[in-house]
Length: 165
Image 1: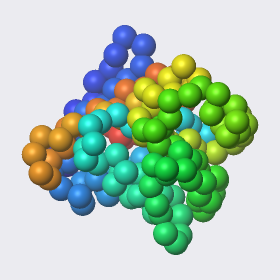
Image 2: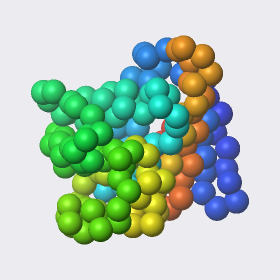
Image 3: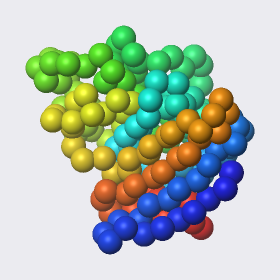
Image 4: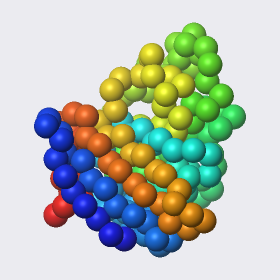
């Protein structure tokens, strides 16, 4: 995994290339080790097949989630219990009515402690808070991915800075 950490005018960013799935797993381990992750909101951006769900599976395992990890594509959210805190994995791909936000109790989930990770966050951008960290994944070829983390808050800055340590 090759890396490059740069700073934006306000919050830091980090860029790297995953050469294969073992790099994805290593990235997830570094992300999982960041203390500020316990109450963060992370958004994942990328085309279908870019590796968003693969990253989430590696991250959940690194955070101590046991058992089957399924994609929340149809349920919109899958709750998980990590070793130290709760985790909510959202997939807003099929989300198209902001009323679903209230009806499904998402406001309560976002107001509660724990990690929130969202795939396809742009589909719910009008109702979600600003992401602490936005992770963009771009497929270079079948196995390589260009990855960029952008911190948007002080919590996100602390997470992104953990990649340069």
